[in-house]
Structure formats: structure tokens, C-alpha cells
Image (cartoon, rainbow, N blue to C red; front, side, top):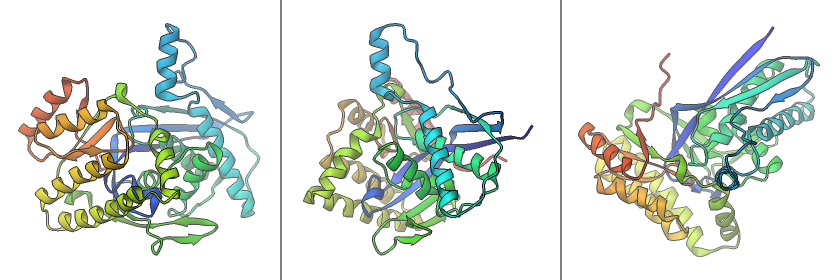
Length: 338
């Protein structure tokens, strides 16, 4: 029996986010500490197997309410269904023949949910990799993130940008440009300029997160999108600033100017705070990290933060400080250990 197993990893926005959906620029890193894994095998019917992570039994009504507040009403099964639908449509529109053998699809994930490390898109990317291999369909690499984004925006109504999907497809470290003059179109999909960078040039990073402090990405992006489209000058100017910060960070990275990189990371969060209402528990994470002497910004929409931390004694102080508010601190793995 043919069995296909594919993974896609968590990610963190290092600089520039959340400007990827607004004509900005970003640099992101893959986080191999966490992954979503999808398994596909030939089966008599097309079957999507729900996992134990999709809870339908709770200790109390309060437990149910908390779960819905953190994770919403849907689980990974809807992501898989939407991914299959868009994959089939992609093939049909291009008259790519698909064989008629059915399959079963299931997933597992250890990516902390709703903390801004792109757990949902990881499931879709892993599923797309399985489908491409099973049907022997080669979707160009630069198109794959755009297809994954359509799964979320068109099928599921999730407000998002390309950044997460780009880094999860390319992996490693990627500098991205989504400015209007950098965007291109091919095969019906728009995509930006994606430049893989050598992970070795990055100084040591940290990521701190807490699953109890999660917030759905829609809480941030739905509001920002509306304000941006309305021409809110604060939001429009902030998106331009995020792009400038990314350019400055890239230049500082080339000359290994850690002090400037730290300043730009902090400024990224401060700019975000100037246009968004941020939960006090998330502000506290940033404050704790900065008090420990490291730079700090959101890795995504909230619930996880990232910054530079080259000194091991400083890393130990950071872990101690974050433990007081029940946050885990890790060194993100950017490279495959194979």
C-alpha cells in the first residue's frame, strides 16, 4: 500500500510583519521545533480522519467556551477538505489528468495553536505536498504559497497574507517583497519576490510563547484590512514603515550590526502597537523580554514573540523571566538535522 508522509513546519516573522498582505516587505524564518504532518494512503473511499486534537468532549461548559475562544469552531478537517478542493480545481483548470484511486488523509500537529506560528497553513502545505506526490502533479514552487493562500482566503474566509505560506514552502530564511512593482503573475496566481537567505548569517534567536495566551489571526487582520482599504493614514504609513524596517534590517544583517537589528525589532513591535489594540497579556510578554535585555516583537499575530539573544547567560535570564508568566522559551531550529 502506498503511504505518503509529508511535514510542514511552524514559522516566525523576524521583521516586517504584518505588512505582507499590504504591499510590504518581510523576513521570516522556519521553526523546525514544531510541525504539522499529513499522511495519505490509498483507500476505498476519500476519507478525512479526524484526530483526537479536534475535541468534542469537555469537562464543563466553561471548558468548551475556552476551547472555542482559543481555537474556533473548526478543526484541521476543514483545512484538509479545502486543500483537496483547491488542488482538484487547480488540476481541472489546467487540464491536468488525475487518476481515480481514492485515499485516506489524516494529520497530526504539535504546533502551538493560535500563537502566530502558522499552524493552520502548515497543515495545508503538508497536505498539498501529499497530493502533489500522490497524483504526480508538479506545481511550481513560487506558485504553491499563492495556492495555499487561496485555500484559506477563498474557501475558509481567513484573512491572511503570503508570508507564512512562502516560508513554509521554501523553508530556511526568506526575504520577501510584496510591493506593487515586485509582484508578478503567472498561471493565474500573483506572487512576490522571494529571496532565500543563508540561515548561518543570522545571530542566535529566541522564541517565547504560551498556548494560554493565543489569539486567532483574524482578530488582528480583519480589522487592519478594513482600515487599510479605507485609506486610514496611520495604517497605510505603518505598512510603509514596516517595509523600511525590513530594508534596514537586511542591511544591518549584512554587516552583522546586532545593536541596529535589536533596535529595528523593537521598533517593529512599537509601530504595530501604534495601530493595533494589543491584549495586555501580550504586551506583558514583550515587556518581560525587554526587561531581560533582549529585543522583542510578535512572531505572528500574538501569543509568541521573537528576538535576538546571542548570549547564553542572557538566554537563561530570559527563560527565568518568561517562566514567571508561564511562557516557554526555545531556540528556533532553522536547519534540517538530516
